[in-house]
Length: 248
Image (cartoon, rainbow, N blue to C red; front, side, top):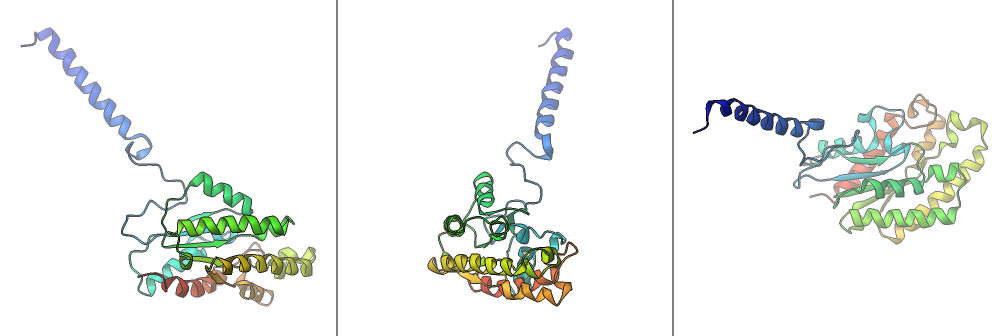
């Protein structure tokens, strides 16, 4: 039996230990066993959910439009509306201004965990804008495509490459050589199409659609450069049916 003089200190010690454990588990609002979720990325999906990874630059990040109007989100919603169940919110690795080099680095740093049921890849406009070498673009795009296939459980048919939009028709380009931009966009797209077909992934040519913005300002957002949600909807309505063919 404890002597009375020891009862109070022992009781206070128990309270201190209990408080310490509660405080440690509350750091960041998560338990130590739960990894932190980066801002702007969805929480990890359960094993039963279908997973979609979208890789790219400002066009995939949805520069200038609300998050709900990004083409990966609209594509996911199209699939849900057309009977695909158990589809998690897309994981998006994309930021405005990214070149193929930037995207490669981001994938290494973020280390997305596959396999994914679908992977989309749209990259190259900033390589063109910065007048980067087309041969090196081919090499880096090839590496990115190979990585995309590996993330899609080594199933090429589950990888979807989108062509580079043509911004030569936008107000942003009016002080540039628009013919040069158009020609170079076509050159870069010829490269990513050749590589895509050689690896037997699915290729979606959205470039003609983006050129319609020349006569329809509603297809651009307020910055006069990037597509609006209406244009992204057009992409989703083409990409969704392609993705549906590979989903159970």
